Image (tube, rainbow, N blue to C red; front, top):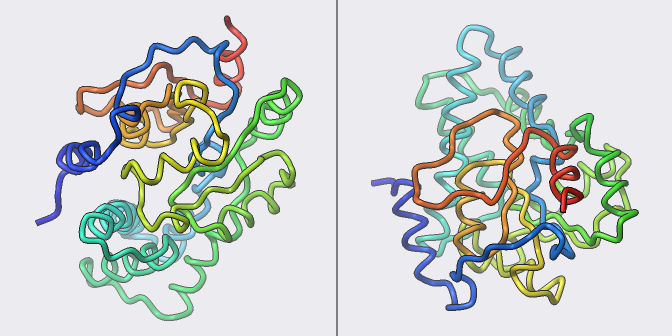
Length: 251
C-alpha cells in the first residue's frame, strides 16, 4: 500500500539528527544562503501543455496521475532503499499512468514528453529576483530531486548560469526529499547552520519536509494551494520569487 504523505514525513523525520528536527524562529536578516527546489525557478507547465496536445481528451487526467505517481515513486523508492534517479522515476511513472488509463504511449510520444523536461525555462520573475539576491551577497543552490543534468539544462535554457553556487541533486545521497539525507546536502555544501539557510519550496509537502528538518522555509506557492495538514507550516509564503526577495529585505 502506498504510504500517505503524513506517514512518509513521520517515518523520515524520525531519522533526522536532534539538530535537524529542532524548530527555529528565524528572522530573514539571519539568512546567508537559499536552497531552492527546482520549480520555484523552473516552469514545468510546458510538460503538461504537451500532454494536453498529445492527449486532448484526457490530458488533465494523464497529467494528474503522472505527477501523483512521480512523487509517490520517489517516496516508495526511498523507503524501500531502491533508489533510481528522477529521470527514471519520471519515465516509469508516465508509463504506469498511461497503462492505468489505457492510453497508447508510443515511443515517440514518450520521448517527446521526457525531453520536454530538458527544455524547461525559468518563470518570468526569476532572472531579476536571482540577480537581486546575488548582488546582495546571498549564496544560492538548487536542492532538488531532479538529476543534475535536468537542473543544468534548465539553468542553461534560462541563461542563468553562474547565479547558483551549487547544484545539489538527490543523486548525491541516493535518497529523495523529504528524507533528511536530502536536506542535509544544504548544510554540507554551504557549511552553515540550518537556521542560516532558507529553503524555498514549490510543493506544500516539500515546505513541510524542509521545515521539519530545521530550515526556515519560504513556500513559493505559485499554484495557490492550501497548506498541507501535517502540523507544520512554512515561515512565510508568496506567489513568486519577487515576493521572496521582498520578504528577505523586509527586516
